[in-house]
Amino acid sequence: MLGLSARVRHYFGLDMKARELPLKNHFPKISSRLKVSHGSAAKLFRQLNEVNAAPAEYFGVLLSEIKHLNRCAMTRRQRLSLTRDVTDLCYPMAQAQMIEHAKTGGVPEDEERKQALGRLVEIVTILIISFQILFDGYYRCGNFRYAMSRSVAQECAARIFELMIVKQQAMALRYQVLGEQDWRTVNTLFYVMSSYEDVGRAFPTLQKLLKLDVGRSAVSLQEQFALLHMVGKFDMLRWPVHLQWIISNYMNGVENAVNVRMTDAGIPARNELIAYCYGGKAASTSASQNPPGPAMLLDYRNLSNAIREDCMGLMESKKNRNAAAMPPRFARFPEMEHPIIADQLLRGLGDTDSDECVESETHFDELRVFVGFSQVFDMLHHKNGAFASEDRLEDVLANRSALIAEDHLATDRSVWTLLFKNQKMLRLSTQETNYTTRMTIGSLLAYGLGDGINRPSLAVVARILRPSNKKVVIDLHIIAQYAEQVLMTVNAAKQAATGPRHGKAALLLYDKAGLGGWGLMFKPQDILPGIDQIAVHRKQRELQIDLKSRRNVTHDFHFYTISLTSAQLGISGEPSYVNAPVPQS
Image (cartoon, rainbow, N blue to C red; front, side, top):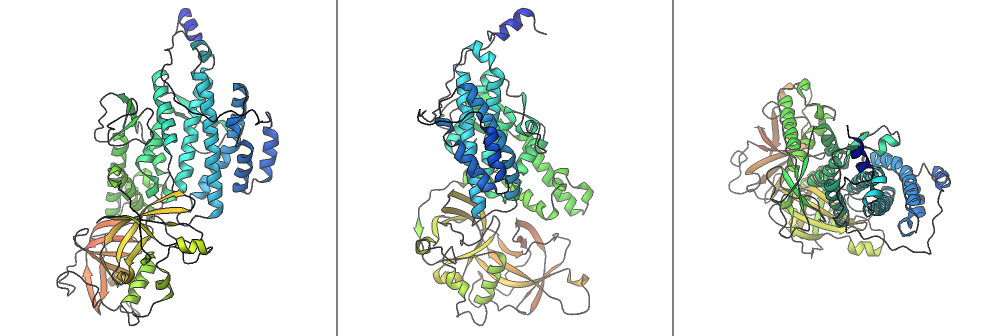
């Protein structure tokens, strides 16, 4: 227990270090012409209550009331009261809407969803800046005044991080990411707080204060800082929206998931990321040649170990068909989601910095795209059938990203633009309208230039970025350069002996460089390599095959390498689309 002298020194702030680190904040200019009605929270609450059933309108009313908040001249007490009130009005609806909109998401985006989440992001941004203005004011005070307002200053810092998490989540649901100014705020504030305060101390969250039955009741600045960066590390642009919250689930469920320390070394080791005070981007595996400020290392080996152990436990429980051995963090998810979650988690532990590429726009009026396993199968069925020379309506429209256009301008711009291509991936962009070809993370896609669609390459939608409301960028991971449609049966010997066997649609794929040979793709179903018996039906022949290793699992398809060789298929040399087999009914 502190003695009297120490308590007096602490009360007057005499035991505190002088706050010398500059915040480097730039706030909107105050306009004397703008006014705000203080103490109007009750009136605003009544207005919002009238539109409570229409979230987009709810956020619209709230946004119109506070859009000039940070340009208004007011006392610190008035700003604190008003910002708290608006946060209390916004936060519960924000949580409810993010839960609702996490059920669906992709391309194109529903208009009401776009409005609700877009307005939410604007509101949260205004609140973050308002809390920054408050924190900046307290931070610049002398030690005595700061000591008198210390708890409020810490509250402002905690709210900035908590609201930044909300902003990051809402943007991720639209396949958008935090900007440079957001990361600069996060990195600078955390470094400053870690220099003068205990960032490991837990503060009450808005969930607790508003008595919401979601999330945690208390969290530290270090945990919030780490969560923001780990969400960036695992890149939510690669995740189906309904699975994006899994990272926060791991962060909350793994003890000391990420540890943060200040460093002068500046070189991250394995399972470490580096971020910088005043830095305008998420933590990276690469050190900056010209660091903007002091470095911070995020050690996530505990998180990495937990993920790898869970994925190994999942594999063992599946192999042994032992549901009781399922890792608890996987047991809470539907079984069909398990392989998708495992793939995304393990991929996220890799080096995402290697995905960077130099874009260069190339317009192809004849780039044709077919999206979805069923559409790709039907396209190949037609191309290899008796009426291959006759174009279907789908074939005519396949060179546009929108089968129907909203207006003439959209018609002109709804073609695909190639931004980047190498042996592993290609990046496409297009104007997004309500009629843009529907796709989600994990959608199968066949593409070709002009008549090249008769010899399509196959890829999977691996990443979606929406840089603006009118543009969408799609990253495709190339799967194979050759594909043919076949029928398949699973455990045919165990099926009923009566009646004909009906094969299911499947695709035989070949890619020497990527696969090292042949692969089999089919609609999602629970099949275990080495246990289930698989047969494919091709050219009136039934071929027994073994599934070897899993290559990709999505909500659209499952994809495995197989034991078949070209010789067993009667193919000499590289497979060719010439004389491709006609599918058997």
